[in-house]
Amino acid sequence: MDVAEAIKTRRSIRSYQNVPIEKEKIEKILQAAQLAPSAGNYQNWRFVMVRNKETIKKLAVICANQSFIADVDTVICCCGTKPDHVMSGGEKSYCVDVSIAMSFMMLQATELGIGTCCIGAYNQAKVKTLLRIPDDVRVASLLTFGYPHFTPAPTDRKPLAEIIAVEHYLQPYQ
Ligand SMILES: Cc1cc2nc3c(=O)[nH]c(=O)nc-3n(C[C@H](O)[C@H](O)[C@H](O)COP(=O)(O)O)c2cc1C
Image (cartoon, rainbow, N blue to C red):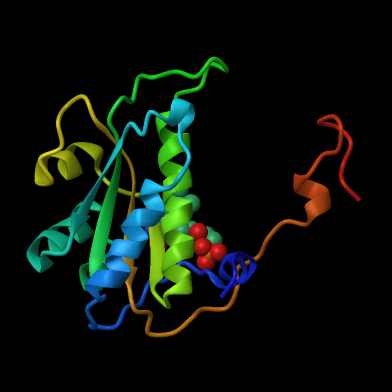
């Protein structure tokens, strides 16, 4: 599978088989995060990989009771370790950095036949307590992994003309 195919076929998976992900495949996914770009190449991130079933069940509860999370093989909690670092454009780098690493992991997982789902609905304080994440670190998102039961149909996307501008903000792509 090439990158274009992975981008095209990736879906948010919310129904997982009870089949463990092989160690080599997990390692490939983790390496995808390692290879992602980051502001200044500071790599101010830490990815907490959770495979313990009891911990995953607790995560499902503190992620807005999203019950499908309890069935996943692996959760990776994606953290910014210097959450106050601001780029010269004025924005904090950690969400951008971590999001790119998450994209790399999602696409690598897709190539390996492994489903993923970003989890943005979670209780920051409770995730930090459960996973012993220090006060000065921020959880940017969580990512679930597992073999899908099925691949859902693609979700809608806005047309390019609505989301792309050319040369300046007001001129739509056509
Ligand atoms: C930042 C972010 C947070 C998200 N949080 C959740 C979540 O908490 N629970 C969930 O089921 N899906 C979550 N999603 C998945 C989106 O609902 C999904 O990406 C979107 O509906 C498009 O569908 P697709 O990923 O299958 O293309 C999240 C996605 C992103 C990018």
